[in-house]
Amino acid sequence: MQDEVWTVGRLLSWTADYLKKHGSDSPRLDAEVLLAHSLGCERIELYTRFDEQPADEQRSAFRDFVRRRAEGMPVAYLVGHREFFSLSFRVTEDVLIPRPETEHLVVAAIDLARQVKGPASVCDVGTGSGIIAVCLAHQVPQCRVTAVDISPAAVEIARQNAAAHEVAQRIEFVQGDLLENLPTEPAFDLILSNPPYVADGETDQMAAETRRFEPRQALFAGPKGTEVIERLVPQASERLKPNGHLLLEISPMIHQPVRDILAGDERLDDVQTVKDLAGHERVVVARRR
Image 1 (tube, rainbow, N blue to C red):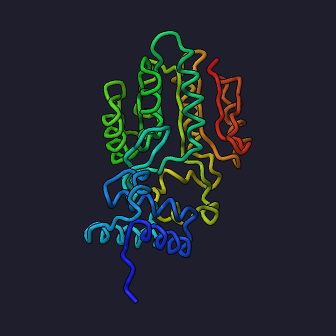
Image 2: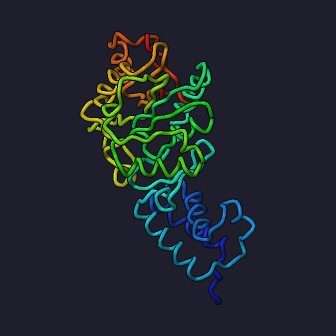
Image 3: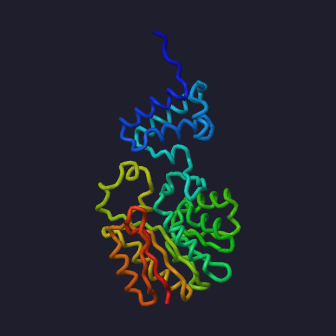
C-alpha cells in the first residue's frame, strides 16, 4: 500500500491528534497556527491549501515547532507574536503572553481617557510587551503615554511594538521599578497596570506552560499576591491629578484585599469593580480626590 502524501490537510489532522495526546487545550488551533507560520501564510489560507504538499524545509520547520509545543512551549513564543485587541504584538520569553482578560482593563482605560478634556496623560506600569500602552495610543490619538517596566528586555519589546503600530512618537519608555523613576509632577490623568498578582502558594494551580516559560517576575507578587499592588497604590495616588483614575487588573482571589488597600489610601475614593465575561472581578478602579 502506498504511503500517504503529507498534505496540509493530513499534517493538520495528525498534528491536532498528537498535540491533544500531549495535553494541549487547543490542539487544532495550535496545529493551524504553527503550520501557517511554517508556510509563511495566514491561518485562513490553509483551508484553500488542504491538498498542497509543503516543501521539505517547511515540513522540517513545522516538525520542530510541533516537538517544542508538545514539550510545553507556548505557541505565542514559538511564532513570536500574539494578537490582542485586534493588533499583532511581538512577544518573547521576556514578556507575558497577552491574555483576553486584559482587554477589560484596556476598554475601561479608553473610556476614561476619552472623557479627559484635552490630551490625556497616561502611565502604563509594568508595560511588558506594551499591549496596554500601544492600544491606548492607538485608540485615543490625543493621549500621551508613559510606559514603565523593570525589565530592560521588556521595554525593548514594547518599544518595537509601538514602532510597528506607528504610535512610538506618543509613548515615552522608562526602565524602572514601578513609579520610582518618575517624578511626582507633572501628574497623570490615568495610571493603569496589570501588575504581578499571583501568590507564591498558587504555583501548582497555574498551567504548566505558564509556570515553566513565562517570566516569573511578571507573575508572582509574594506570599499574599498583593505585595506589588501595596507598593504601587501610594506611588500612583501621589502622581495622579485630582479626579484622575488608577486602574488595576487583578485576580478575583485578591479582589477584597485590593479594595481594602485602595480604601486605605486617603487620597483615593469611589472604588469601582469591573467584572469579566465570566462574572469574575477583573479590574478595580479608584479616583483621586
